[in-house]
Picture 1 (cartoon, rainbow, N blue to C red):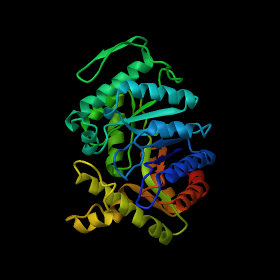
Picture 2 (cartoon, one colour; picture 1 turned 120 degrees about the vertical axis):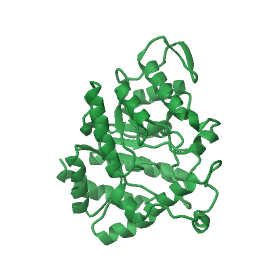
Picture 3 (cartoon, rainbow, N blue to C red; picture 1 turned 180 degrees about the horizontal axis):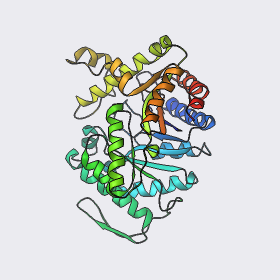
Picture 4 (cartoon, one colour; picture 1 turned 90 degrees about the vertical axis):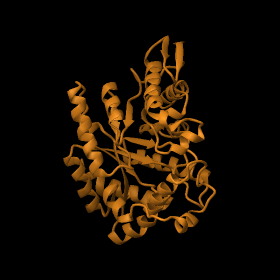
Length: 346
């Protein structure tokens, strides 16, 4: 089994952005030391849920401070950006990292991100598919030309080209939309599974993807799909509950809160005020811990990951720092995972 590190880089009240950048860099360096195959970074805008509006910039910073671990985006919200710029920046990162770039693309999860960029959320699917076609074309085709309702390029040569050939590996995040899954299969790229999807639904999606890809003549085994979950391991169940309950609840609260803010964001508002004002509750700690996380003692975590292995999952991604877990707890969980969980999973 391969292991991946993942982070949104959350920004809870009372923490400082510069310190969080230092901590995520330290965590990825530690992941490399522990033998993780890759480290993946999210992209979000205008929210404390994730303090990374440009995962490529942060990934470049991290790549310059590591030597072996692959660096990935999970995901680039490509419809928000000029795809030519993403192609150029991605190629530069691939060179700087000596060919360690994995690129995950997605449509994003917040309509307010589109309105903040002055874009119509209803165009997200079209812009998403278009952007990937442009980026892949620029990475692979000299004198690339392309025209669509969203982009027009004529005889463009990307300088510099990426190091990996024909291009850095491309992953697509899909959840419920069959159109995205169809696009993914038709383009021959791989699937990646985000932490926001329930495990049972995510496994069903993986099986459908593998079956649909095989029917289209593409061999995409389950073992190649990065499967990300919120993750925490501690010595006792009491310690697990004490360390994770408040942080998972913070994730649930801010994800719910964001849905009620059509413009602007929650950044300079107080979460405690929202908790008092709301008229419905988000998913409970118990539900999220059971359906989107793997948390527990080493024995419990091994058993849960082995259940995923039984479905064919062989590339497991850990989101250690969910909800702003804090440096010491993250590093302790990573250490225990490497000592008591990883060796028992092959």
